[in-house]
Image 1 (tube, rainbow, N blue to C red):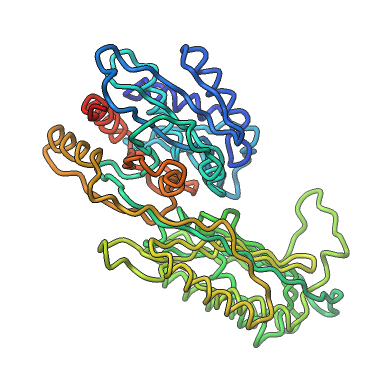
Image 2: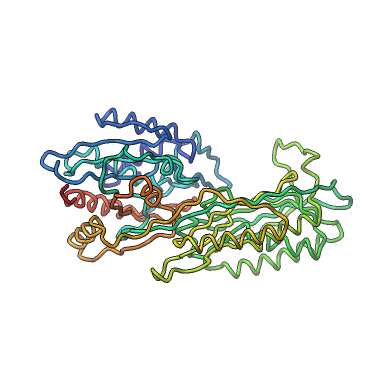
Length: 493
């Protein structure tokens, strides 16, 4: 069985077409053209705004013109993550999928069901003559994953809708009515380097095999952060064994929990055996700590070997001064990471967290990037202040950007009441009403369209933002059936 055999075919065929379009964040030219061409082929009014968002307008089914206008919303970009042994260029290559029982997966990469399935559902509504609905607008935003650029730049007045149904949630049977705000942090410093030491051997250190995942949805799972773990391995090597740090790199995206981190070090010839024993002891402890959450965790320490065709550059052989190496590694360890506080207002939900997302120490520059999330603005500000204190105490400058507030639940939401009733009538149970510890675009869009009545929903996805991302196939049928029934029951104008 392949993706083309799945039901409902109208949704899966559209998703298949999206997998053919390379669409990592900030490289959405191909998928944008596809969406506009698709709309033209189906005789649907469509255009791209100045930022690159795609907007479509679908007239009401005859007899349903008096219903309020609904905006179906998703984002066109996807998170580009792959396993280290997979050859894939996200800017050029399509996503290859396979059916694993009741799950759809990709072959060693992210699947892009976040948020390709949401966009595919909206497209299915637009093209299906059997779906009854009032006036529909479809908003497909640009660059959601790396900065919510399209949502932030959307101008008031372009859309005429009254109700927004965001299709970017990841658990069927849950209706989301609130989300966390976010804030980016970047720390930078310069450092002095020294020439290759005598009587030392070059070694590679790797922490890999971590599960990673979405830095909002999966942060509550307390999975291993490869950046934090490699710092735990390095610190005793620097402090007790005189190991010299050449470079370090871990993590690739601000909103993905780091799965891998790599370092190059120099070890004195006489201390190689002791260092190997130290690494083995720490590796054993880490594997025991994360046996449940990250059973594939590996710590690999081996002689450095040039890759085929790699030319040794003398500049790469220099190492970080001892003082700077200790300062940077200690900062990585001291930087907040993971769940900071659970919500009092909504039990079981994370209120505040930080993802220690990316670290790079290379050729004289230290770089560290984090993404903070919180449903409480003051708590987010307090976490930022603590991070600022950590780095400034170490003489490292830190800057904050891209801040946005969360989306507060609306107790009087008309569309939420409709969706609750429809779900119970269809499936015999109440949907869960939730807030999400992730940055849904609803909060930002409300700035330009404060009158919108909003709910977020979607099919069940697991491990988005990682190569383990997978979509639960039966949930797509349920969401498709539910969405159709909701559109018939939209309140009148």
